[in-house]
Image 1: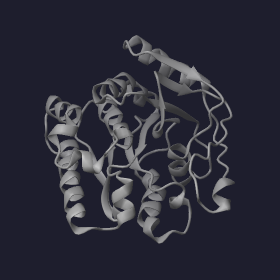
Image 2 (image 1 turned 135 degrees about the horizontal axis):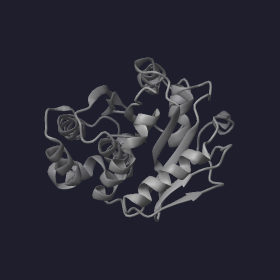
Image 3 (image 1 turned 135 degrees about the vertical axis):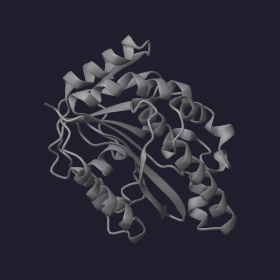
Image 4 (image 1 turned 45 degrees about the horizontal axis):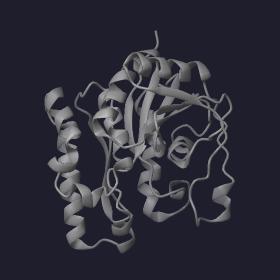
Length: 267
């Protein structure tokens, strides 16, 4: 019998930095390497990356995906990574069918490549590249309700051994990151992180959790400071929906590049 696979919302750090010896990413690198010890190896992974938006929910279904080096200004070796994990077109087709059945417009695409929101964490989670991978886009417009619904439509995949992974950052204000750890700004990001952890991990009803996530930009303290644009947060919405708005476990909570970021798991 196939073990029920987890749902994970994971921080992927800055560009390729978790794959380098950068000391600011040492704790994140170690965490990502250790996460797979918590559960049996999934049959496949469906990953939602902050770095892919499309007019409709789009599923990347190449059988042998290439990598898309969608970052700039890093050392030359970071543009020569390889991650030869196979795709799984049959899983991509099933994802499209589940979304279509739920009334969500969806399409499969080829030729894009795995972006760094996909391959950076995957190279640390399963460096052997032995787990088939399928990537799913965010939906342009970044409506939180749409991404909660996206997750709800996909939750059944877990019973087939497909892990659902959201790859983003719970804090993503690049201007603040580049400014360093300004005390007033750190206080603001800590307040947002506390609200997010409470929302996802505390004993709220599924209805309460869903409502808080749907209204995150008005309900959370300093929401738009922490996410001037929400593409790095919305993979969490997909994960929460896929987990049925159950209470998550806080699996990562550390300062990263000056501000606290969190990761969550539903096991």
